[in-house]
Length: 130
Length: 130
DNA sequence: TTGGTATTGAAAATCATTATCAATACACTG
DNA sequence: CAGTGTATTGATAATGATTTTCAATACCAA
Image 1 (cartoon, rainbow over the protein chains, first blue to last red):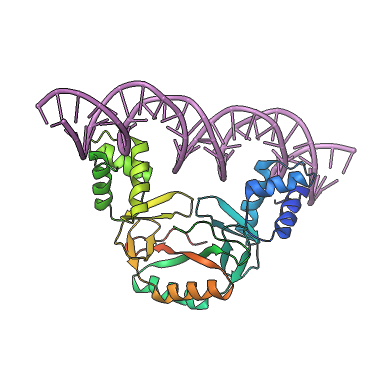
Image 2: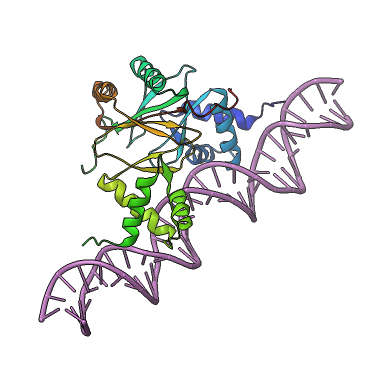
């Protein structure tokens, strides 16, 4: 049976206070700084659980790190600032529709799509362009 | 100055024979099995180069691995079979447009988007549904 | 309170990827 | 073709995120 521990609650709560996506490591440091003695492995486990239950949203940063964020239960996508991490939840019915249609056209079943936009928000000056 | 080595050529060529996305590790094994003595680090370097020059396309698998594939130079997206790796290159002008528009609406600059669909192709029977 | 068992957490184990660095192999020169 | 400067290679060590291990602990139903 699944139990309620202060650790799980701490992770859920800490995730809620974050304005954008955080890595497990990042959330762990954040918790430590707030005086918590929670273990790193526990943070990983709690985040994985939250993500599985749909309470958190997870995605891979372009560098391959797993990032998490508290989210509403509906399916949605993100616009993420590469610099400050500011995240805007965006709807994309248009894209949902496109993904479904495209998968079907090619005979693919049970499609899941990854649709996220990374950029620099208005408050962050873009680094040297390529 | 950039030099032409048989290793770089071997990676380029091996990538060309793959039908879908491959990981650096996978391509390395593949080359080894074909009798090549190429080193793993070299495969990583060659793939990174190819990706940078636009000769290869790279993306992160849902598990966080970097996957590569020989590709046409234009920007495009993918429909990837989770089971056999079959990959279909898809165009998504509609989505390009949407991404650009959405980023702009929220004041984001230099947007890059991640748009890929994972599913099961018609030849692969889907595993137990959730 | 008590017992069965999830859960925890420190440390070790994994795994993909990157850095190191001496040896090697391109490619340009004469 | 030989000589030379330097990019490239590759075995291996290092890194960094994530997972596993496993004994100690804490949850919760009875």
